[in-house]
Length: 216
Image (tube, rainbow, N blue to C red):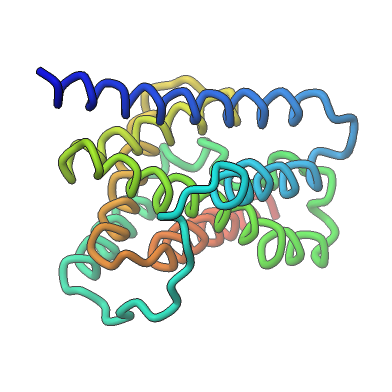
């Protein structure tokens, strides 16, 4: 009975922190009067990197660059299967998984596109991977099983993506849930967010390339 109460308390604390971070991020994002690019980058870094690491003072959120970089066979298989699904299912192209949708008036400026895809987007993605994979999974694993932790963080990631892009269709929800679950699995297997970060960044680059090719 006591452990169940403690479990519920831990989940409530995590959930409350996520709600506060989401609320602050979305409120500022929707009320800052700029071009829609720079505030996205800055707010992602503040709310998904700095807050969990510094302000919340979580001792578990620390960098470790000495993790094993050996590619696990299961991870390689998942990469290939997921990549095949993404490339074959054209239904996912309209899901706005690229951030060019926020700056479509820059489509003819290639230097801006390169700057977005190779500077700004990696900063955004790394901050989000730090929060959703490293921070949340480590917090959830204290009270939940590995599968439970993966499912919960994937669900929280889906909620964020729906609110951020304002897309609420089932294909978008399913795609992002599967994506987050796989990225979480990468982190569980390696304890290294670089796998999930590079996978997500590579996916966006591929989709951006396909979209730009179709536009041109």
